[in-house]
Image (cartoon, rainbow, N blue to C red; front, side, top):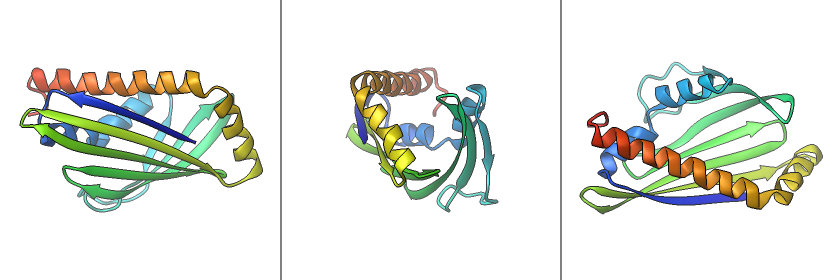
Length: 157
């Protein structure tokens, strides 16, 4: 099951990349939403592989997920892969400079069920695909708007 969204941001590609690769901010955001987030590596430079052990509730059940940053191509692309039970996922962020101060951000999520229970979960998500897609687009648009606002206020450099 795939979700895809594209947003144009009034900020240079380097500033947008700094925002989407600010893992400390993303970790804090997940913690505020009730997730348990723990880095499972001791790497200090983002170009090396970084991984997280994440716990959260989904549909009334506690879930555990391992997320690993597998590609870090500054300032163009990030790829994170995840595994939760029998569900594999990929989140790909591609950035394209449209001009000196305008960047196109494409965020794709691909979920692949590997077990029967994961297939059943994805099938139920397919039944609600329109609603989930709308929520996904709103979240990505809000994320892009936040990046734009932080850049305009001088908080991204």
